Image (tube, rainbow, N blue to C red):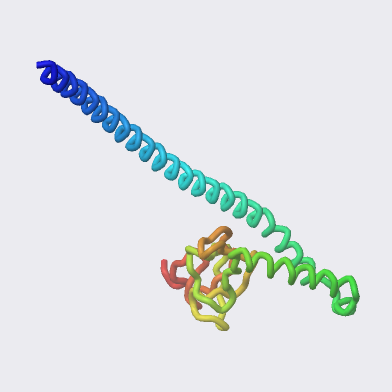
Length: 180
């Protein structure tokens, strides 16, 4: 009988240990699941932070490019007004090299100049400042660039200001000259 009590006692102790083991395993699984969720949340946060950082950098980059364009335009404009007898002067050659270097920096950063003279007018890329009567160009062809336009990664950031050829029988407002 003594043996039987001992077996019963061991059985209850064993059941208690098994119950505690199951509870510990359950808690362990809960902790592991929680850790995995926390790890996934951390990875998502890390990705989101990288995306935000890239967006901030792109915004700053685009802002700097936008601020450099007028400086580049002024370089180009000033070099167009150098008197012919000074074109070979050292200072003019130096400024031309600086302008070329700046042009390469802009190009390397995704800036492209919008094509104008001789091209068809495109309202997405060009802003028509004036319609010009001319026999030298077909209607809607750009005859003169007043201010250059630029794209940044194929998105227009500054439309080119241009003069556009109009039909010979068209007035500046686009109506026929012989209309009453």
